[in-house]
Length: 240
Image (cartoon, rainbow, N blue to C red; front, side, top):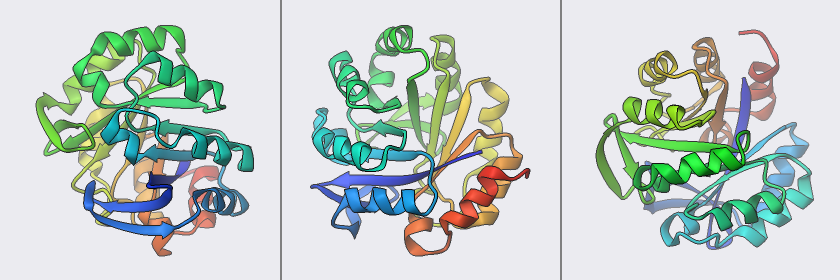
């Protein structure tokens, strides 16, 4: 199972949010490039980067900073946050991003996803952020009436091969992942699933891995010290 250390960008700094609340943010590193380098030195093999400014504005605010992070580490990265045009996708991929995550735009315009995966079948992921089982959009500020399971199935039918599922109520809380929701998603779709939200320690990673989930994003657990990269890599590399 691939482990993705998370770097969330806000105002040029690396931050963590509590349940996606912009009012409850903690700066964990003033220098995101240094943080990316640190993760690489600790053994990370893939980074998950979110442009929180972009999630609100709908523009790639932190693209130059993300380019620096890619150049500094040489690691593959997946990037999300405000991806709402094919020009943005092209810009991120041209900058060296391995995978681009479409979030809110997928709910508003499924045809956009269909065209994106037609152009870049291996390099597009759909981010499904759920609150009480319903899909949330626009930086998690709005909650739709769409079930995350139905939406995942719809995205897969459009050609999506990777789904990143976040339980908002668990994100940044260290409360443990929503294993029931992940198990239900695994049963519903054949697409690769990357879990996000609530990971607190190595045991959580093991539990997710045993569900057959292909990847997990870890953020606050790594920054707090509850989880080390070496522990994460044990799960990534070992049979669980």
